[in-house]
Length: 166
Ligand SMILES: [Zn+2]
Image 1 (cartoon, protein in one colour):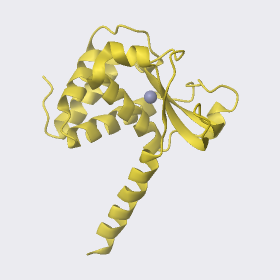
Image 2 (cartoon, rainbow, N blue to C red):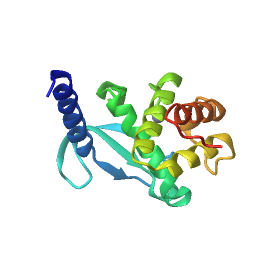
Image 3 (tube, rainbow, N blue to C red):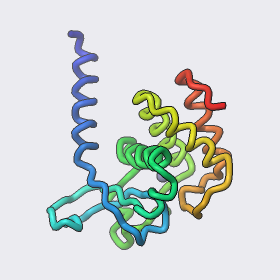
Image 4 (cartoon, rainbow, N blue to C red):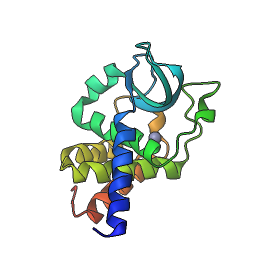
């Protein structure tokens, strides 16, 4: 095997382990469908943990259904994989999302679209596209940047990967 292939496999292995270790914590008080924050010591189940965690509002995920939930989950994983999440953002406020830039939001969407299409879960991507193109049943910090801009990015990313959403 050539060296680049080994390095690539190693990176994928490390990434998949990293992601396998990201706890996903339900939080009905969350004012959004999902976000990534930093755990500084202990998970709700008492387990010792330092690192990024994904928290999600189980009421909202039930409302929007499994496809959109999957899209937003991989959006959050995108923030982690792309190195957007740093512990210092969350020192004083675990719900802080002001660090996020428009570009990072679009990058996390692109990551989610790419992963879901590779997993052959086009319906998740299609529903996310419709979601950002239309009316959202809840107000979300995820709405910045504008929904339309995110819809266009989702559409274009899917098209680059050979999937037509319309
Ligand atoms: Zn985001």
